[in-house]
Length: 94
Image 1 (cartoon, rainbow, N blue to C red):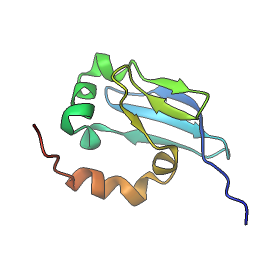
Image 2: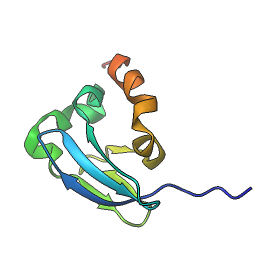
Image 3: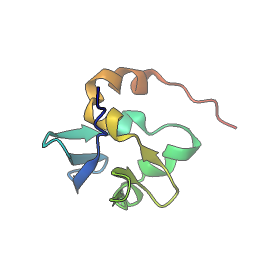
């Protein structure tokens, strides 16, 4: 069985904390990331101007920010399966 790696191939900022993403299989979705922006790594992304600094890393097909925050492309593709876990996650702050 061959595994096909999911990659983000295009993105657009659609709101203060939302992105439209297109994947290498042609599927696309819009995600509101605000509920997932918790913990030391993701907290800076709560600032809309910082969130909008998102870039597509074309080499590996993920989205990332200047502070090295990123999201797995498979998770983004199948976001509804993971969204509740992100909403309920409580990070241990230092």
